[in-house]
Image (cartoon, rainbow, N blue to C red; front, side):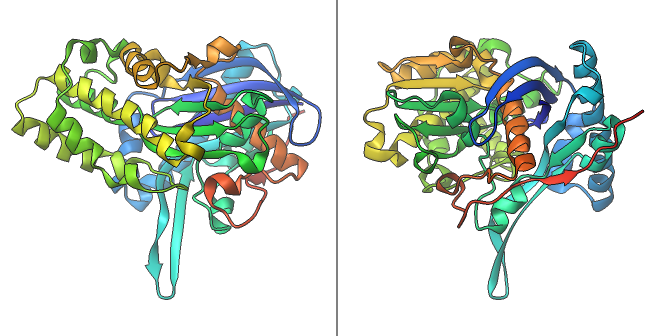
Length: 387
């Protein structure tokens, strides 16, 4: 069957849209990418999403939920047109949605502690506009079963990159970075994965601050490469308690968003650092967070043979340079080295998860999220194919 996967990450910089062909049944079908596009949000929408994520009013979030549903629908239809497919040839859409808040550790309510999460991008709108059955809202079911609700892509990483003889670490660098540990001969119950800290989030946030909103990223890491890493600022950053928290663990803008960025900027001002020095230090901090995962792996990662990197972070040459240095002599490669598209894999993962939901197959990994049992994630909104 043909399935479209949709992903908008913590950076909220656009909608990644992947059209895949899925052949076979069960947990390990063959998946082939037919087309991929990233559609940027209209001007101002990213800013509105980021505002809503930390201080949005109920009416703002209510409105954005349906507006993003329209934008996700547009992304699907534009992707299909670009690749020559009619909507009636597509069986499913798997939509991650846009996370606006993720409280995985929970808030006490009497004798209970209530963990919660909220993704917007209304799937009813997507199903209505496209006519395609839409599976969305994956995280809540895992959290209802006692899990963190994240990360969710590791089951797909295992299907895509699990190897009978090689032990691999898969690194996804989006707004937040996460890792997936795939021991050789991987069984699903052996997969370990968790968020490790900020990927692009602080870098993009700081470049927006120092350019007064004129730039969204340090393209290719050009400014960071001109700077010097400041040991005092790096020491302050690496003392963040999230890095010492044992898995399962997940984080988002609540942990490393604007309030933390403002504290970071104040700290950097006391050290009288240039913008390039701050960006260089933040780049190393992101890399340090990834490398810190080794302390939580079996035998502290001894036996690891390959590191495979995907996500938008692979476009940052300075980031990749530091990452290769910290993991040396292990080879650090990208998804492209294995025949995959770095930006497409996360969107493909939600097409895969939607397929499993459709087939009635559990699609969470308790070894990753900490859930008490396997469950079928995702809410299904039936489509109505147009005549």
